[in-house]
Length: 408
Image (cartoon, rainbow, N blue to C red; front, side, top):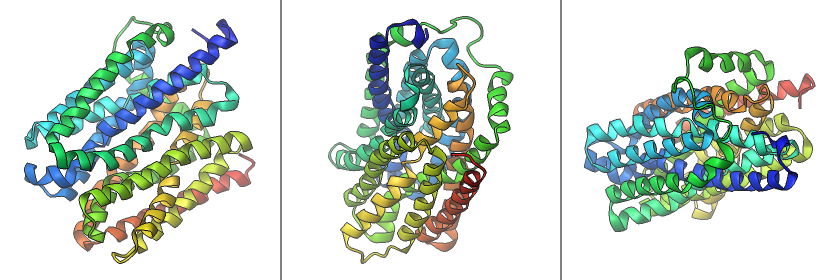
């Protein structure tokens, strides 16, 4: 199905339904994707590991997500984007249930399962949105959909610690799994609207060529190549905030579990509004690369500010720094994905977004383990934030050089 084959009012209806539904799915999948990081202070003692060891869990999740994301575009064409989304949510539910078992071996396995479920979702949703979104609304649309990520972070940071204190961490993990299943079932009425173009024939899993070809095409684009390299550091900073903010608050600022979760909620809520704002501004100015360069510099300033934070700081100041850092480090992704989709060949947006996700996920695969090593050697959370702030600054300057060559 193409948008030119149906009346404009139907296009608008399909656009609105897709945007709202996919944003909600993104929010829920983010909660499932990051449930271990939020549960770490409560779950780690029961599992017999240190809370900071969540870094290894995160690395496993993102490592599997790389493969799943790159396969997501071809699988969306084969199964249909909605069907793939349903399957991904069901897999995420199994991962949450494995974590809820309270067994260390199953908790490790859950990282692999959750990564497998979360990886294909961006490619699947991009396949739908690229087809139904008016070109003038591309950045704001992808940014609104991606705002489900920080919204999921914010809800997780604000609600999960309180729920854990009332029901226990295992019940909370299981509850997220149940919600994933319910959401997958609720998406069924959308299949006739968006999955009519699925081939439903041939092999289910993509060939190596189907995975590598869009990656080669994206890498051949000099602008996308530089953006993909910048995405490694940008996503690493985002992963640092999401996965270590609560632990930093507890161990570095002597906050209690709920108060540390609220700091994360402030950062991620700012990221949610930031994604929409930066996407709207990119559409208004038609300068998405400028927006990404500015966001990189803002991440750098916010990262250094958080590294300089001290335990005696008042809560409002800590929250303000979290808002500034979250608004940029969690706010960049929608503009990036929109630019990747815009530069894709016709009909291949999902494949291109899936391919470039390799770089978005590569940062969170490598960096949390390095962050854990830095923490082990220096016993300092600020050191890790400062190193990552320097890396985002270098990336921002690399994007700024594109602007001098005439790109926007």
